[in-house]
Image (cartoon, rainbow, N blue to C red; front, side, top):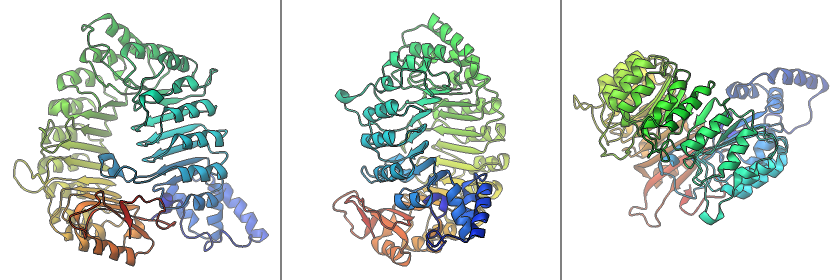
Length: 599
């Protein structure tokens, strides 16, 4: 596992981190080196520098200001804080990504408390914190707010366990707060315990630059929100929740014409009774016309189609548009998208159908990222987009670098076409939701399509495969996917040989996620030579046994092997339903719940 993911390389003792101080001449050299290294910003460059020799190891640690830890269990808080003593910003990740799909049980772990306790003692000048898939309490937020007097930025992504009471402490105590972004978090508020956290911000002019709370389920004090926006002249990003009506949004925008990023919240529930062309639409359009700095729009929950024309005045300036919560049709999308010639990022539901994607392809020639989400994510749903839409995008948006595409049917020809037209792809995630579905025209496996992606897209770093795939597809991935760092596999493969191809061929692989695939112990053991270089391996609903997992644990003692059993009594005690493996400098964790067995 690389250092940028676990917070440390080899032991400090072996690298000179804890011995006698260096001679005077070496101290002079280290001072010079520190002055050079402070201009090195890339994590990977810094990790490489720390491995040169002992003096570089010490100098790199002394000059590092930002700490990235891709797995909160890969290193202990004490070890990280003892090595890096001058940290100003921390990024910390917890649960594996499949938690987003409900595959990681509740109360699995990833608790923030040990980390905030260690940082409170070691990093009094901490300014920025980003947590992803972590479990934190209101007490943790209170400790954070009271421990860092110059704290400025807090981003919580897919986190859980806290409530509006914790947000109130942050708002009240962090007097220099510039960023408070809550993204797809789950707040645990009882209706009778909700706190008016918006009112806790300072009553004087604030430093706020970004405020996002679209995931907060409870209503906010709108008068306090409006007053907060008014006294925040530096505010550039604002995302409100669905309780904020269109009329209230209008008022907020009038108070903050300087906004560059806006999340609209509800865009229709209060407007449903307003006839098309009503004064409210005209007024809102006028407000958007006055927001000349807007480049990013999102939100649009409960969207009312008659209000969509209100955003037309800003469409020409938009570089990012997120309709992933907006159930809009192709007919409703086309009048909007035809104005978005500068769009680079577009997220949308599949309700726009292939016709909507064809309109995107005809207009958005500078598009770099596209995500098409399903309105109905079930396997037997009726797909609204298909190979037709994918081909259109590949032909019209040739600068595309990242795509996530959910569909029910696909063809090899469409995927091959994309591989030829969009050869700068870095991310290709095709999710055919029905299990093991072949090319819907020829009936053949999807091997040649995915093979073309790894052969023609030389910059590919992230790949998600699905549909009917044989071992041949994985042979292609192992042979040509030399830069792939993240691979997600669902409902695919014939034999253990498929995974063997990947583990032996993809030498830069860092993250491997597999679900509902026929891979067993021999496939698992094929990666013994590579697991120490990976951040994690996740396998669920495969054909693993406790015996095979135990062998990995015995042969790789610095690898943590977690077997997750959600039921007290499984029909087959030898079978492993879920496996999560990762390297840890701290060894097995001490907070594993009863349903997690660490081998």
